[in-house]
Image (cartoon, rainbow, N blue to C red; front, side):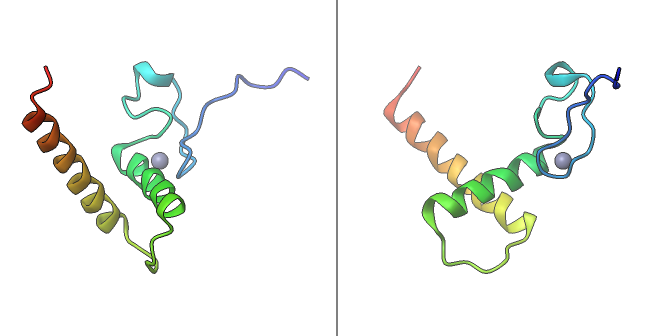
Length: 80
Ligand SMILES: [Zn+2]
């Protein structure tokens, strides 16, 4: 059986992301949004946050906040 070449799909929403990382900067996700959703899931598992269902918006805000704090710390410590 000669199947079609396997097209990778977004790990979150299963949209096809043919072309791979060169065409999809957020590969293996179709978008920044899906990447954040996946990160949010990971955070939930790791820290077992006592949170109810959260929206993508809430998750992305949370991650952005963490990222900003991390960058602030790095600049304070003077990495270069
Ligand atoms: Zn997606």
